[in-house]
Image (cartoon, rainbow, N blue to C red; front, side, top):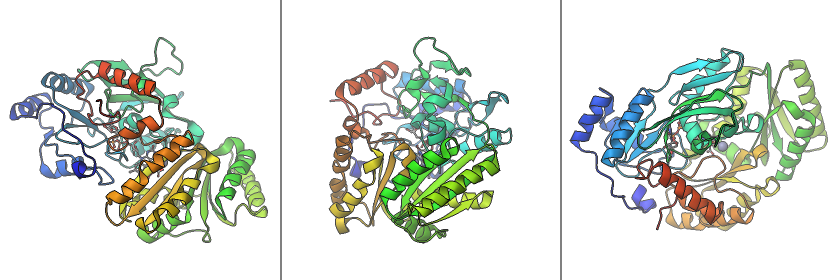
Length: 475
Ligand code: FAD
Ligand code: MLT
Ligand code: ZN
């Protein structure tokens, strides 16, 4: 898959030998995996668009074991692919060739939780949903949530700087992550696992690793600030007659719901078709060109319900919204969220998916979707738009029955050039990984790119950590 769709040449790393496997067996006895079935699953990404051919996967339990492994790989010039839940969208989580897969699956222990501050310290391989359950039982929530929560690891979330469904309210991991423990390429353990809210002692090194996609170090533990669990959560799912109304509803919403607004997501009619057709979900509202999902999180149920009702009355009266439903109970709330969260799953049932994750000016965010429908015509099976509208983040997805080179050529660089003209970002939240690394220059100037390359060379001089990812190959 990989070499055919994305031409790339193997760099001169050593190939893992029998002696290397024996050395790993001494470091992590019984946790050196060469089973072909396990490897097959870890060699291919969630979207099934890139595939590597690694012959060994390592499952350390501790930071010391990770350090030992990396020290060995560095010495032997062996390339390493850090892997969490393997839910990444840009081909960063799987090897391109025979890189050793370093999995965090067994690094799944909570280290501490402070019940007053809400600071959680845990190993990198904890599954996001399990952490959510852990902190919810103690009156807190995780500051991030995403459709992949059942599989993704917190270390993977930090490594990709995942955005997701709570970004609007709780902001980026650059703000909520208080500290990190990272093992560098040569095996050095960098313990910056602070639990402090404020700490201006020198450069904030942890920020370098947030969003570095496994290219600068292996994140082994995370300290993260959890907000208190809101006492009242409401979700409204609404139908809008046009994109202008989606935008106006957002403005009205900000004005009337203010401090309790916790999510503003949108999806178009094609997305609704996909989740109904492929996943058999039922739409709770009349058919509309657009749908929005609004979540409020507050501390007083009656107060929040009153505010939400005022907003809904106004939105319906002024024709911004044509139909809607509201949920407060857990079951209905989950069912409404599923319509939005499961779009990526529905898309993967539709055929080959060309996935773009763009930051664009909110006012013109949907124009690219409309424009592409005209440009691609019958070449594409479907062109859909959805995303985190409240954060100016469009998920533009195109499907076709099977991979088509001519369709890809019609999409790229067209989509990137369009985005660059708007001074947008070619990766709002998924990262660059393997598939988007050559598009970096559409969103960053040459001086920034050079500095990134210098940082990479400083932290990983042999380039063993996640090679072929994030940064374009140097001439
Ligand atoms: P992986 O996929 O295993 O790895 C991702 C990258 O991080 C790779 O480059 C890998 O090498 C690196 N990495 C992993 N662990 C470590 C570590 N411990 N140290 C260093 N590097 C590491 N993303 C969003 O931002 N918002 C969303 O709303 C969202 N929704 C999603 C919904 C679905 C259904 C799916 C499948 C994905 C979604 N994603 C979303 C993509 C997102 O990037 C991932 O879900 C998640 O953040 C990756 O975590 P992971 O543990 O699966 O990492
Ligand atoms: C989402 O918001 O659903 C995710 O980022 C996944 C995707 O874009 O498909
Ligand atoms: Zn998203």
